[in-house]
Length: 248
Ligand SMILES: C[S@@+](CC[C@H](N)C(=O)[O-])C[C@H]1O[C@@H](n2cnc3c(N)ncnc32)[C@H](O)[C@@H]1O
Image (tube, rainbow, N blue to C red; front, side, top):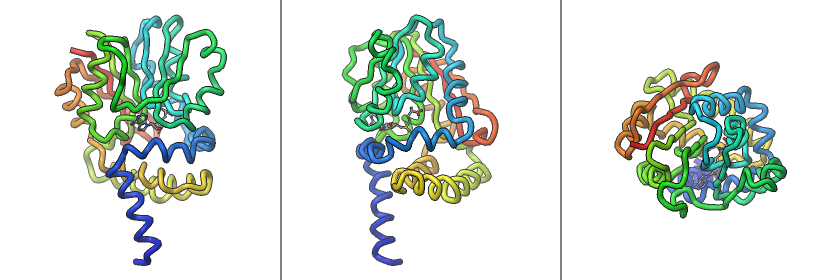
């Protein structure tokens, strides 16, 4: 193996081992993120489906954790006639893109974006009705600590919705993701964004993430009940799931 290849492998491994630097990597690809996800068929529709699955009344105070450029914020906004959204992300670049999209809602106070680490949330106990976390939990350095932090800031009876690449526990689903990831996502998104590091990390982080049953168990162990697990449809069915649960 050449030294260049060795250095590259060390870089992606260290991102997996040191997830705190993930938001910094998202800064590099922030300007091309929306275009890349637009080409990923069904990306926004899947977020919309998970948001609908929360079955909201429409007046909730919702935290969109790891909101990125605001695609998940948009999905939640569609479910909230009179509610409000706080979007949190630790990438300035991603939040700048989000700011551009929601100028009207920001000026009316319906949406606010905050730069913060999802592992160190400063909100008071019992302050949100709902937490939506799309493609975020997998990026946390400690899933259990992250879920306990979310549980703390949810009101009693409040809802969590996790939307993430979470592969069914069988060899076919894993092979499907590996082929899709290394054969298509990494090469294609690298050309598009000029950076392969975060996309290689994406593929590896999904392969090493919990399976749907493990996420359900972890939710129950961290103070949630009534956990509902549902796959998304179409080509993401074996790899993408929605989890909705209630603070016990
Ligand atoms: C794949 S994007 C998802 C964005 C958005 N939720 C969506 O559905 O399009 C993941 C986001 O998580 C953010 N992120 C990763 N680790 C984080 C952390 N520890 N605290 C806050 N944000 C984090 C990244 O900066 C990135 O914007």
